[in-house]
Image (cartoon, rainbow, N blue to C red):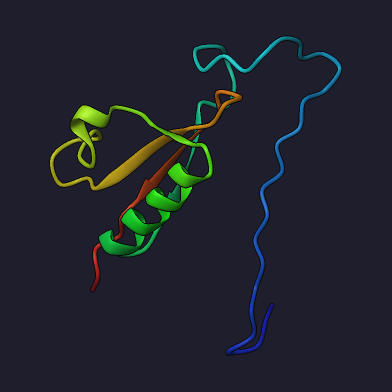
Length: 93
């Protein structure tokens, strides 16, 4: 555990084993998407814009940022390999 003020790193590694073949398919059993708490809406929007500049595609663009429902400010993004992430804005307290 890091001391107060010390930076922490979090990593997520996705691996495919020998028993997995073919490209990612979101409707097959297994991982559909990862959701991340992205801070307040302004931070979530800034991260979304950075992701778009790095080649991620905004899913459900016609309903963004409320594609997950009224009051659920989030961005649903997909990369060229078909992996999806959800960046969820967390209301400030």
